[in-house]
Amino acid sequence: MSTLEVPGARLYYETHGSGPLMVLITGAPGVADVYRVVTHQLAARYTVVIYDRRGFSRSLLRGPQDYDRRLETDADDARRLIEHLNAGPAIVFGASSGATVGLELLARHPSAVRTLIPHEPPAMQLLSDGDKWVRFFSEVYDLYRRSGSEPAMTMFRERTFASSDHQHMADAPRNDANAAHWFEHELRQYPPAPIDLAALATHADRITPAVGRESRGHPCYEATVELGRRLGRVLGCDQGVARVRSLIQIIAPRRWRPAM
Image 1 (spheres, helix red, strand yellow):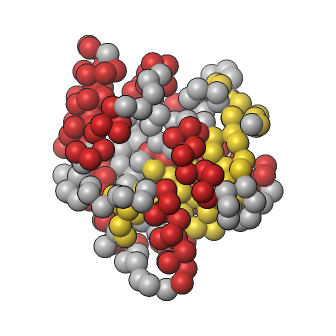
Image 2: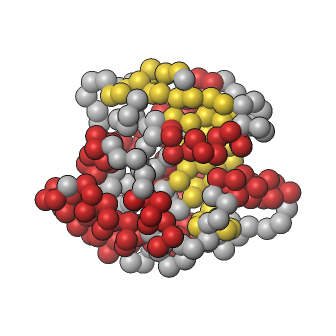
């Protein structure tokens, strides 16, 4: 358990195992504990880094924040963490908004990333009906403001995730401060955030999009498939892809399938 001072925050992080560096970036609820169940498996082959993103749990904010550039700042935090460990470039896995952070990291700081595995980023701008989903996330936020986090989270997960995920999400430990931070600064802001496809195309060979086996038809699945299509990332059976597939099967063994 360690901390890293970055502009405007102190990041809490943990390292486990030895071998090539792997950084796991969480979406909601923003904390390292999301990946704890798989860390010991991955640590047999990798130096695994899990961390609380700034503003969540143990990664405390320090002073004023530029929330208009929060995604850029999240990516910069990941870059600073990788450079601090002096073991990069890193294999980076990000789920949900953590995948959005990973895409921003590769676009802005490609020297920090060896391989990026974005799992269902909420990249709504890639969808023809993306504006509909952006409006929906605003409706979820409005419900949060009126009625609190529990009814808003219920509405969010039942509309945007496969039914197999609902109970798992409902059973996650509750942290009201983390929920408030996510509702205020991420729910409405990350889904419509621009994805720099031109920058990503330059490094497309490093990107392996991933989706849940049961998520077909849900917005983040469709956005990931569209991301793969635009970057020409249809997965094959070469040795590099096989290694990546084995990692994701550990992280999400029942749900993962290649994005086609």
